[in-house]
Image (cartoon, rainbow, N blue to C red; front, side, top):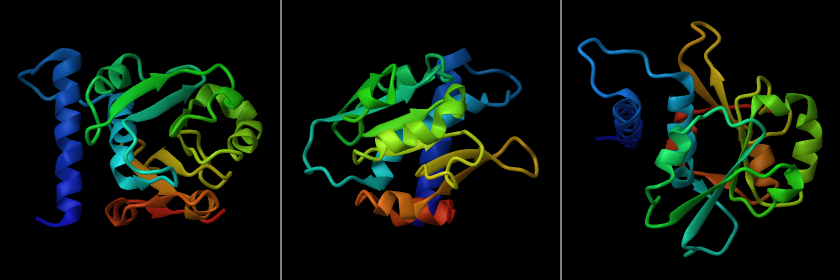
Length: 183
């Protein structure tokens, strides 16, 4: 099984797990809610990102900046460790309170302040993630974008230049799935 197939299988299993957690099995398959899929992608992201911090840490800090669009889906996922590391889910009120986070999801509710938030987070080696349209082109690192053709499937857009500026690297498996965006 190729690396791509393993990653796809991993994400599919996570989406199925989310369906069972949020409503149980049904006779007819129901579409998985957009933010259930996005929470699964965000939760799996640390497995495919190399941070410049010393290896061997026992905890991953995930932060949601702004109005939490995930409901309880991300919190349920965060109860399970990632590669043996516990996950701490935080919701700071301001960007300057997220500087110690490993991953920061910037909610759409923060669209008007996006430039200011990215400038503040530029001081720390944090992986910035959002579903704000144009996020990666604006200097964010990972954009979870709805595919423009159908408005339903998700695309992962990566701004490698923004990540490289902080010595953050992405696993080759993720890069094969993603579309690289140049600002």
